[in-house]
Amino acid sequence: MRSRSFGVLRLAQPVKAAAQRFAFLLLAGTAAALLILGKADIALIERFRSEIGDVVAPVLSVLRQPVAAIRDVIGQARELANLRSENVRLREENSRLHEWEEAARRYERDNASLRRLLKVTNGPLSTFVSAHIVGDSGSAFVRTMLLDAGGRDGVEKGQAVVSEAGMVGRVVEVGQRSARVLLLTDLNSRIPVRIDGKQYRGVLSGDNSDQPRVDFLPATAQVQAGDRVITSGDGGLLPSGIEIGIVTSVIDGAVRVQPFADWHDLDAVSVVRFSLSVPADENDGRNNTRYGGRR
Amino acid sequence: MTPTLSQRIERLFWALTPTLMTLLLLLVVAVPLGLPHFSSIAPLVSVMSVYYWSIFRPEVMPAPAAFLIGLAEDVLSGGPIGLMSLVLLLVQGFCVSQRRVLLSRPFLVGWWGFSFVAAGASLATWVMACLYYLAWFDPRTAAAQFLLTVTLYPLATWLFSRTEARLLRQA
Image (cartoon, rainbow over all chains, first blue to last red; front, side, top):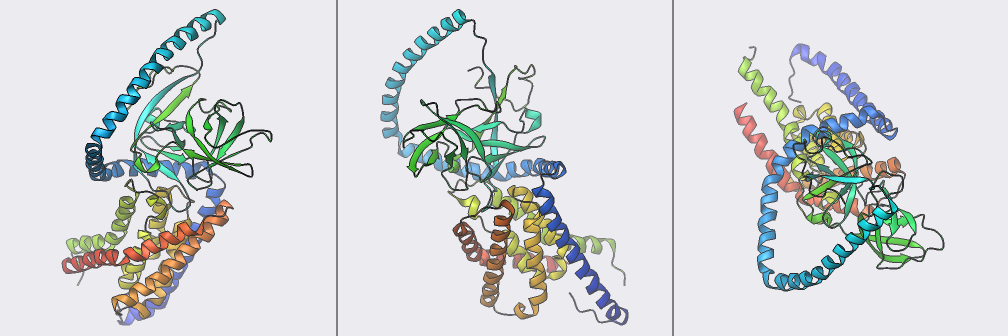
């Protein structure tokens, strides 16, 4: 405080100090109360969060432009440097994929004819909303990201968020134009999963480390490093078969998974809209890019 | 002499600048940089700011400002709401009460003082987060965040003192 020691103010000083102390205690009490209320999962607090998210997301998406530009340049330089080896790799991959394409066409035909024979109706449909990651503001204790797509784009709470490589996390908060993703690695993340190719089901639990673990596998499960982990679709909230990661170690029954998603190189992701019926207004959304479609 | 309207506006602007600047810094830190693990050890810019201003210009960093900055930080990170508010209030209260000790001392003493305050803030945040989630968080993450925060403090001080000088000249 600037020392103003004139008559009246000198008298007012202790009063002012007392008022400040009272304000301090009141604020500290409010903060403590908010902590307790937040723990009780009050809807009001959630709405408050998502509204702030809506305000912040556009600002962040402006702020990320220069950073994104720099990352682009670095990425391009790296690509140029690897052009030759990348070309060789892609040629090899291309020839391998040609064989797969043949196989896929054959399976598709078989599948369609078998479905016709069995009169199977089509399963649930997934459509995608693409979004940018504008905020990577987790702390030492939470692993979350902020997206620039929200309720008006068709994003809803609980939906899966995927990158090209695999699943990233799940939407936990939705505003009008922003959404928060809880990453697979967060302490509170729980995803029903399956070991691909084997029918063991479990729950992928994050623990803030880079490698979440699979809990609740059957006691007789034979899981080994190298097994792929995918979503099981149990509970009906997430589609089944989204790739998550690969088992890296099985120590004393603790199965650790390295997610396919590369957290540090993420820029754009897709939110999977998964529903049992096709939304009619699917192409109306402003930001909606439907690149997945039926699958 | 009563201040004119423009003087009042200037004063208000000056009073709000540190808070607004801190909020902007929080956003800047939240921009995805693509650096491995950066988001979990991002420097505690709020602690730097509250420390600096409540020692050098406590009139522009009152308790409500610290509370508000903490609230913004909690909302932005998706962490427990109220946690950083509480921590920053403690930092503010402590710094205001101890400012005579640190004021008009050489920069290194201020830095040394900051490392203590930041250590206290990190520890308090870590303990409260563990209690809130009833989980054991790796203390090394919090320690890394603390070290990065202390390392970057001179840079933040430079920014804050430049702002302070410029605003004082105008006011």
